[in-house]
Image (cartoon, rainbow, N blue to C red; front, side, top):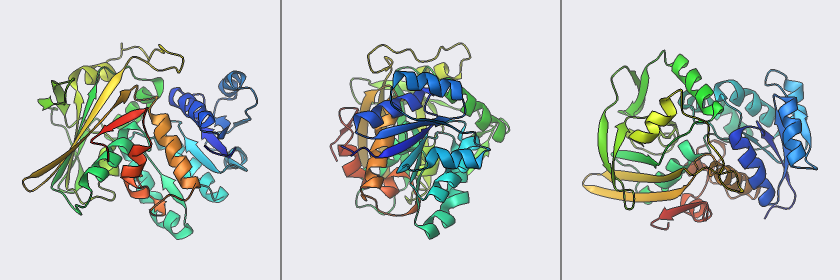
Length: 343
């Protein structure tokens, strides 16, 4: 448990931000509620009496500095991250505190590595982008699965989501990414990101029981194509999404997630199947859980806890698998996420 350390949550009133605030409190941290909308922050504070509210626009450095003043770390959960990541990282660097975000946007995560890698390393700062269900979890699983391998031929991450009811933030981030790509799709092949206009294939993926074989959309590319190659020597990284979930997130008529329990979680379940291949050898790991937005909170908060207790492997901009001991991190995630085999 933390000992009352203060952690600023930027975008605290958003769907994922609310889970982060609640989980920080469960772990003994004291969240500071920040973001662009003062009225929504006040409403959230009414649900969490005693927590401080510090509104800040991303184009107001002085307000961001106030939002982070006295905090031990900051978690940015406010998308689109193409807009928020750089200003909040700059504020974290000025405050000399660790930065964690939950960005799923491919280009925003790539921008973070490109723009801040040298500076953060020189300053000994810790910046962990994509510390979330997409980008962070797959990176931890692939890193732990590779174990003693220093390189692999390919990594496959298949997302077995029962359904996908997107948040407003997910939809907004998707629009920004589509605009940045000029409507094109993206894949990671031959060691680099490649943009294309090909139709995405529908394939059959052999998920472990009880999910079993399911239709998936191939090259349904997620943030893993940034996080894994940032530190793993794998020239081919491919991600897949169950067809039902892909249809749900792409349809304009799909409603937002609906809470069905006291924690605010939806009924959505997931199975993440990671396969890493080298030569004729294959290694595999599977993660299971419920509600991709809810489980982002324990991922981000565990990262904060490890950053503040010195359990890190590097400095600068680093993905989850590079910054932390991947097997140890995964062992800390139950009951929120279970991993097989146990690393």
